[in-house]
Image 1: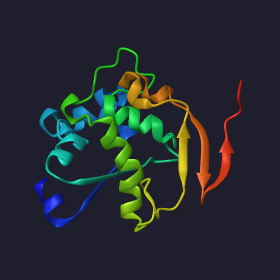
Image 2: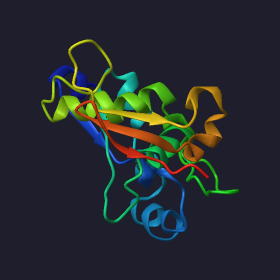
Image 3: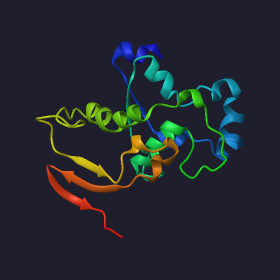
Length: 162
């Protein structure tokens, strides 16, 4: 793992896969065994080693909603997980790190140097959320909705108000 940072490699994470689901108990853990199963999706360990993360989805086989992926990266439980146990809690990452992986990390791996962060001179591709996800419990991240989307400074999406 320390080689990621040393080599400048980027870990491309798919956070939605990191929730404890029945297939984990029925297929994955029995196949891998407990020792190797504990090595799955080491997002926290990668960050602690100094690695850079980028995040995406496996659309169309999982949700394309980055807020759901961010929710799972932070909580290690699916948004609708109910009483599901936290999957490898030591590998959770913070909300700021998950957002950075989705925005700046994705821009970095795609060589989009003028995107991925809000700063003078950057392209004005922005998403406006209906709430500040830092002001709510992390268990509510997935309840956050996109209110507006701007591409190149032009509004391309506005949520309909109820």
